[in-house]
Amino acid sequence: MSNTQGNLNTTAEVGIVEDGGSFPPFDSTTFPSQLLWLVLSFGVFYWVMSKVVLPRIGGILEDRRDRIAGDMAEASRLKQETDEAIASYESALADARKKATTMAHDARSKVKAETEGARAAAEEQLAAKLSESEQSISKIKAESLSHVGEIAAETTGELVKALIGGRAPAKAEVAKAVDAALK
Picture 1 (cartoon, rainbow, N blue to C red):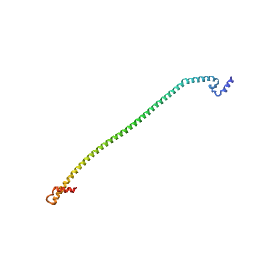
Picture 2: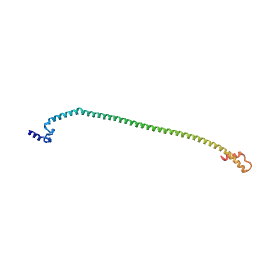
Picture 3: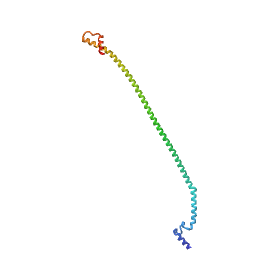
Picture 4: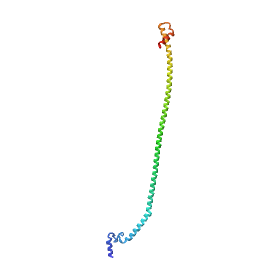
């Protein structure tokens, strides 16, 4: 036995424990049982992983993938709605600007037409008043000129009377002389 014990000590020097026995994982007599438990543990671990853990992880990943795809689709839909809203807003803004420009142009044209009408009416009234004034002036001038001869004849008669002294010359003769002088 000492021979066997010596062999054990020489072959398993690395696994010697202080109490004199060898470290069980390095003990070659326990290899078959260790291998059996290794295979059984690995098999149970593999079965648990393949039947329980990996399907759960796969389900979680699938749920996440579906959620991300749904979120991406929702984001795409919202982006499209936003783009449509922006396009609608810009279209409405352009229409409003166009309408405002048209309204301003129409208002400007209306005010211009009203101003032109008022100016034309004022010019017409002024022209009518000017015509009336010219006619009145012409009438007064004609009346004044018709009286100039009489006034001149009368003044001349009085001057002659004052110069000659005494009696005034005949009105018909003075009027005839003044008319000849005026022509």
